[in-house]
Structure formats: C-alpha cells, structure tokens
Length: 259
Ligand code: CAA
Image (cartoon, rainbow, N blue to C red; front, top):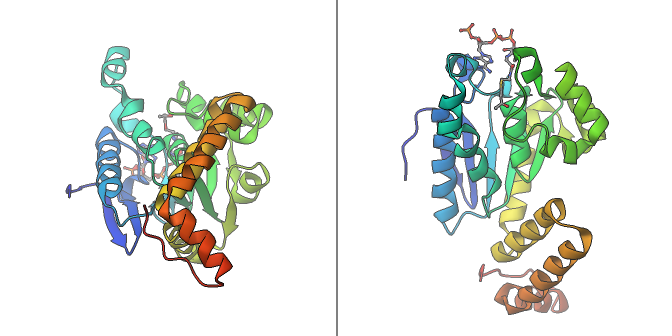
C-alpha cells in the first residue's frame, strides 16, 4: 500500500474511501494531491475485496480547485510538459470500479471536475459547484467544458464557465449534475450506504454496467447499443449471473462470487 501526505485512504468492508486532507487550503488540488489520488485508485483497484470507491473532502470543501498558489508561476511549457490534467484526472475517470463523489461545500474548478470524473455525485445540501477559472484569466482544464456540458447542457455550462458563478445543490440536482441531494450531516452515511449497496453486487457485472454507460458519452447510439448488447451477452459467462437468476427463482438472496 502507498503512503500519503495529502489524502487519507481507508477501506470499510468492501468500500474504499479516499478523503482529501488539505483543510487549510480547502483541499486545493496540487500536483502532489493528484498523484496521491492516482496511487490510491491503483491500490483500491488492485484490492479484490473492494467493490466501490467513495471520494470525499471536508464539510467546508470537497475541493476549491487546482492549487492556484502552485500554478501561478508556471509557464506554458511547465504545464504542457507535466501534463497536469492527465496525472490524477485520467486515473479517476478510467477506474474500472464504480466511484462515488460525496460532495459537501465547495466543488470548484478542478474540484467540480474531479467530482465529475466519478460515476455518481451525491451532494450535501451545502454543496456549491462552479467553474470559476474565467475569473483567474484561464479556463477549465480537466473536463469543465466537456463533462459539464454533457451533464447539464450547453446553456448552463456556458453560464457557469463564462460568468464563474456557483450553482447550489438544488440547481445541480435539477440540472442533472448530481444524482441526489441529502442533508449535510447525512452525507457520508448516505454515500457509504450507496457504495455498500453497489459493492454487494456482482463486481464484474457492475464493471460492465459502468463500461456500457460510459460508452453512451463517447459513441453514437447505434455503437453504444452494440457495446451494451455484447456486454449483456458477456454477463451470461458470469457465475454471478446464473446465481443471481437462480436466487430470484428460489426466493433467496444471491451469493456473489464476483466471478
Ligand atoms: N488554490 C490554492 N489555495 C486556495 C484555493 C485554491 N484553489 N482555494 C482556497 N485556497 C486557500 C486560500 O488562499 C486561503 O489560504 P490563506 O488562508 O493562506 O489565505 C484558504 O484556502 C482559505 O480560503 P479563503 O480564505 O479564500 O476561504 P473563503 O471561505 O473566504 O472562500 C472560496 C472560499 C470561495 C472557495 C475561495 O477560497 C475561492 O474562491 N477559491 C478559489 C476557487 C477557484 O478559483 N478555483 C479554480 C482554481 S483553477 C482550476 O481549478 C483549473 C483547472 O480547471 C484544473
């Protein structure tokens, strides 16, 4: 297992929990934080018993964006050579296990983008989402113009990226960015319960469902339908599929072997 300075990683049964831990800087996402998130995903993905990963921050901030203090002196070539956006971002988005962002407080800039790299966003009623990069003379760099537009549509994505304004949890739910809004003091309870429920399912079936849904964002409908059909057929090679259907018929709970 890796050791971490900026995040706390634990497992609770079949759920892996990654907690951003730079409270004084509202969990600003430095290169180091992104590297650690990527290493944590590597560890949790390699652990067969983990079936779902929850990513969270603090009560005040999920993450207030990329670390502006670290970025300010950087030049084009510094950013281009380091490929900042790929360091942690791609690793979270490419994780094969289901991921949930549990968002309380600010999810701004890279923080909003990090949440959007997860499969499900569960928001506390205190959550605030935004892409304020324009106020810094830059633009989103890890999905804020792309994933946000696919999630909430062009007009609202333009509104957020061009004005830099924040969207509260209710607006985020109305817009389809988040799957549910819960009272702030229930956020972790709800997110962990959802993660436990997912982790109790057949892990390969969950990975296939995730892969199929992700194809919906990257392919035309006919292509996505083909992928879905092939993955659906593939589930008939799973022991968990024959057990799941047998359990239904025998009126009992299935025992998943995750094979
Ligand atoms: N980077 C570095 N430090 C940050 C930070 C960030 N993104 N966000 C907050 N901090 C620091 C503040 O500088 C402050 O540090 P000091 O105590 O040393 O001054 C500390 O965290 C607490 O912040 P505030 O005093 O500002 O707290 P607040 O409650 O008054 O305001 C806030 C909260 C509205 C979130 C405000 O901190 C803020 O606007 N933060 C910046 C948000 C932002 O612009 N994010 C986009 C970053 S660029 C990006 O993410 C690019 C990309 O797409 C990859």
